[in-house]
Length: 89
Image (cartoon, rainbow, N blue to C red; front, side, top):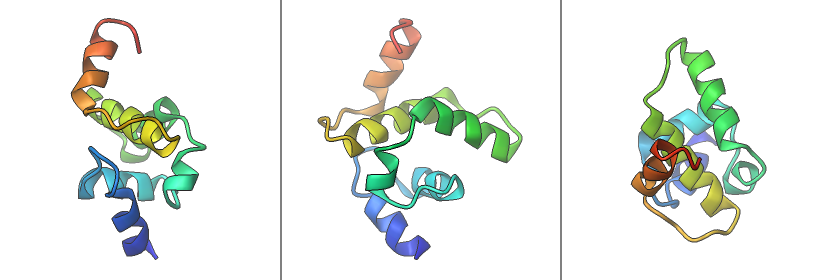
């Protein structure tokens, strides 16, 4: 089951094995499920689950993946970084 979810999630731009594994750790069951989630909340849950502050670029990758899951065009994670750093989350 986790392997098929991992493969499905990795069809999204910016989602490699590590980000897919993070989503699985957080209980994401696939792209349709990811579309119902909030990227910022997922990032906070990941920090709590790992007992460490994750790199903010993980948040950017999460935002990209959630947007794609919701049908928005794929954008590189670093575009989200620029927005975050400019205070335009």
